[in-house]
Amino acid sequence: MAYQTIDPTTGELVTSYAYLSDENLEIAVAKAHEAFENTWRRVPVTERAKIISTAAAILRQKRDEYACYLTLEMGKLISEAHAEVSLSADILDYYAKKSGDYLKARALPDSHGAELHIEPLGVLLGIEPWNFPYYQIARVAGPQLMVGNVLLLKHAENVPQSALAFARLFEEAGAPTGVYTNIFASIEQVGKLIEDPRVRGVTVTGSERAGAAVAERAGRYLKKSVMEMGGSDPLVVLEDAPLESTLDSALFGRMFNAGQCCVGSKRIIVVGKERGNAFLDGFIQRMASLEPGDPEDPKTTLGPLASEKALNLLLDQIRLAKRDGGKIALGGGRIDRPGFYLEPTVLTHITQDNVIYTQELFGPVAAFYVVENEGEAIDLANATPFGLGASVFTDDIERGRRVAAKIDSGMVFINQPVWTAAELPFGGIKNSGFGRELSELGFGEFVNQKLINVAPAGAPPWGPSPWPSTHG
View (tube, rainbow, N blue to C red):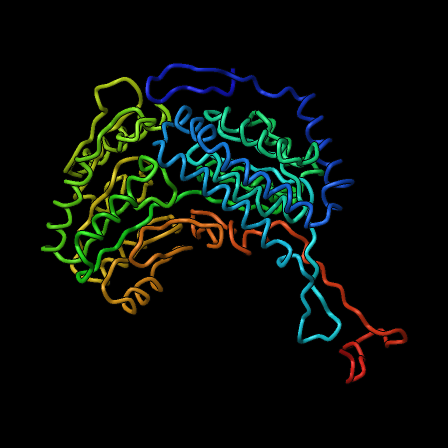
């Protein structure tokens, strides 16, 4: 069986789902294409908004039910599961409210009579990961369904119940058949979907390897794509940053979602030896205080990793870090209990010749660095193939702005770890991918910005429109 729910607190198989047959996949694509051509694109934006806002309301009404799928399938702490459900509802509401304005034709002031009109492209394929099973979908479905596109959603193979729950959400909200379709597709079937002329765009959140493969295939068939490939975000602590509040932020930035977050603060960079020693002591103390347990128990502060594969990858990275001269300041091993639990881990003495120096640590593992000055901190922050997010902590806001301007990333937060909201554009540069999700930028990724240029009857065939000077 292809798609499986495995309880990460026990390692036990809960349920399985087979891959969609090729015949049923063709039916799904045909229904999606039919829904776009003859229904959804023609539904007024106000009516689309009613459906999407209804979906948001259902999420809030059934928050506990939806949250439980997250704790069951990937071990998310119940408080964080509730937060993800609420954030997903907020994103759907944001686009339900904002899309009418985003879809308005815009005059081009430098050419009288010229306007840009926003139109949908068609059927989109979304390929999403397991770490935020609802949020990752909402930031695609919210804008793209509101613009008039329709969505085929291929979710991660270890969160099938979460995937089915989100599909039921839009069905219950009144979306016509084919507007949102969950597909339990294989990798081979995904490749065929990308080649299918009815699919006009692809959006992926996942590994570099997966993103590169999808982007290459989409490019061969001239399909628009958006890629979010993760990151190795630096959290830079300048000398004047307040110690205790910055430590609290560093813990949150590293350990939210058990550290399984693309914009997690994976590299802690502290300026100054004295400050570095104090920060390391405080950070270790906070990491060591986390208590593993049942993620549905509100008292639990450390959940499991989502899978044994994820756990073993981190254990291998810790081993390699130590082999190449790194030191384990805290943790480093599997917790002796059922499930996929890893000790909160802090690595130090990671040099440029250490194999993990440029790797992403996707879990409760932080690489800790101490540098002599601001310039070294910036150089280290940029010494990564990734460029998703970054944080700078300082008591001097203008200094923070100057440092932020020198960091190569798609997002920089000053005096906060990187976070996300519907109104904030999300995305990176370098190996973190291309394109943006959320805000108006995310709304405009899969659209036809159609130019309509108007001239009065009898106008010459070339040149600016000869409107009278009194034309409004």
